[in-house]
Amino acid sequence: MQMDTNRFKQDILPLKNKLYRFACSMLSDMDEAQDAVQEVFMRLWKTRKKLEDINSPEAFAMTVTRNYCLDRIKARRTVSIEQTQSLMYTETGEEGPERIAEMKDAAGYVRKLMEELPEQQKAILHMRDIEGCDFEEIGEVLGMNINAVRVNLSRARKRIRELYINTVEHGS
Image (cartoon, rainbow, N blue to C red; front, top):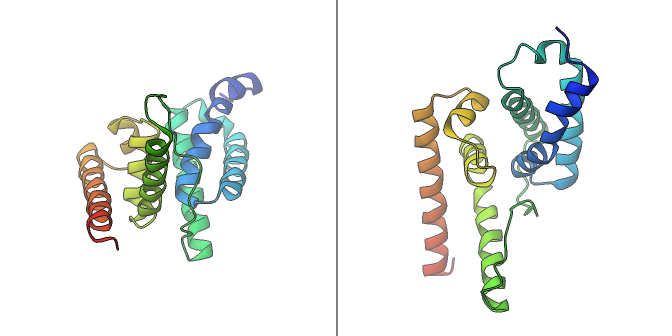
């Protein structure tokens, strides 16, 4: 059975922001991420006949986005270290302006450190800590078992923590 236009609008189009943030985290370029999401939507629309048979269209859309982004990264052969504006930050109003600025600087630096992670760890860290995906969904999107997802997430967090602490303590 083919997914109709209304169902596509209802089930797939609301994923736009999530796919965009995911593409931003992988590509580190907001314009390229927008292009990626448009391309992913085109691909999903072309395969709408198959979408009805898929258990989780959201996980499938994330997988298509991931694969497209990996193709783009391979095509350019280098990973940009530009910081993205996609990391969500909520101001509570309880901190003073200096503390808020420090937190934003730290968040920007952590985003930069994420760029140094292997692609798989970067994707897992983004999906879990920024998108809030559960382990099962991450495993489905990346084609991994849950234990592998947990191990890679732990390694990614540990590496970010080590790099961050080393920079803070040694100023390097």
